Length: 388
Image (cartoon, rainbow, N blue to C red; front, top):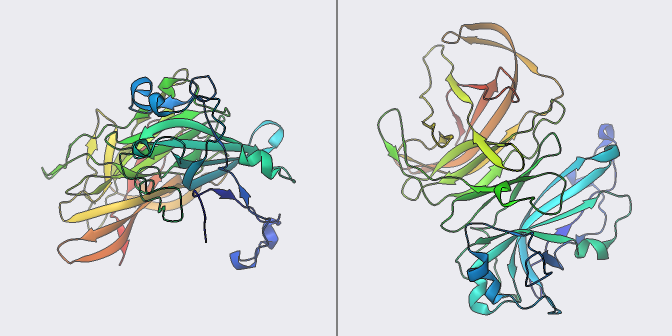
């Protein structure tokens, strides 16, 4: 029985050689280590500094007045929904990056409903870990808005507000880049980029994804708004040097659907978005429908782009092999008929079909016959597939 705030733990298996890895049920595990015992919020009322960023809120007037002085002894948090990557940096030494969402336990009850923290723990994947140090390792990167009830830090706390706003995701890309995404109330999907540092380097390292209406090729208007449940490809292809990331998320109230964009680092510390060119593969019995695109905002709809489908909870993965793969492909419209080298990307989502009152899992494999780092690139695709 849990007693007190929800907490985030880290647990790893004992080392295995890749050729002798057992099934998951046969893995031996090290003891779990708590990560969220102390979260450092780098704002003037906590540590006297101002490195924690505010996402679509005015920190000086909305957040800071509710936070006690930095001399306050106890600052516990209620945390959940972690995401993790492990990557190598200097001297090929692996580092662990864990991100999760936290609600303040020390601020007045009414204020707990307003905000949450985007928290990160970064530590070396050493052979022996120090649980005490890891438990005080969390850094509040961003403070965002949730405007949902926080139901207390005791055993009755369900974390229901963080299950809607606060489902953090993280990506590891080449050149030491780390991408982050989250959802926030009335502020769409937030994104950020940084290198191996404790906090985001500047305010322009985070940004909000627009929520425009998008018109399909058949003339239907797919309404934007209520953006939730972001997903990043966990690893970009480090072996091939890809330094961008793909972001997908659920959007829409009346007609929930899946939106798509790509993140890359602009000049300095700022974060930018772009879209590849989507190319319909053409062979019998024809071509798939065109993917609706908002070229101004660099956003596409890759799932649920008809008024009969409600799509949600997307995930995205990319190929990670050290070289391109080969595929025999016939695409009459693109003039391809033979062996093609490619990388691939897959987006999957849950979908409810109103006309038949049934749910299914749907996915689309995108074939990139340029390379992800040759921006903007081309994604060739066929009809979306589904499992009932």
